[in-house]
Image (cartoon, rainbow, N blue to C red; front, side, top):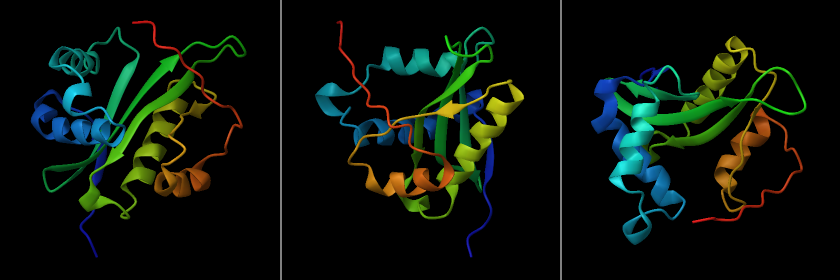
Length: 154
């Protein structure tokens, strides 16, 4: 049986432990090498987690001083309800910690944070090839049926 882990808000001292998780997440989605995020984007994202005026938040899973996973989420307004919505933008568990409930615990912590903020829903999307994660997602949420479209403007 593995030792328990803790889900907590990210702290400023976590940067060096958070960064490999963030890079692993981005590599999973093809943002590495020549398509990697710039350090400016990484640093700006990191700073937003600690800016009280930003709606962007971060949680980490920690065990024995090591970070096992991350969840980034943000609150935003909606045109179909008064209460804010919560978008779970990034979720990643280190490969060594997969299958231990870390992803589920991070999602449930986001649910609690969203509920505390008065949100009526939490939503996210994933790539259609992310079958392993979708096995979890199918157990903790319902598919919306929506398809995501996007256009890069820069």
